[in-house]
Length: 102
Image (tube, rainbow, N blue to C red; front, side, top):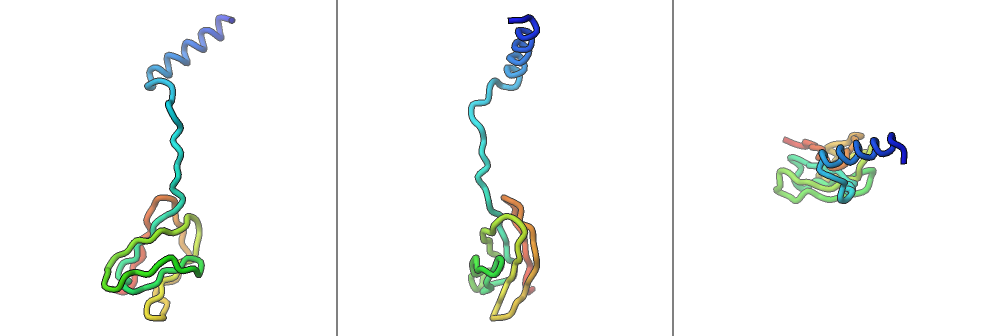
């Protein structure tokens, strides 16, 4: 083995020792959805791209639902009327807050 290879291997081992050693396992991110929080929407139905993802329980001021990550059309209907309609970008692991009503 050449001196350069031995030196490089020694430096690499010293570096890893200073960093807490070799990695024990890889961390895999498994979160693939965001959350949407509807405020002031008791009884409202929440739709993403025209598909219902849930209904805010009546009398509840704030409610969180899972939403798929990416760019989507978000619609909130209450009493048959559309009270919110927009295109939103949901980031993995984040919460998008939508205020409807008062």
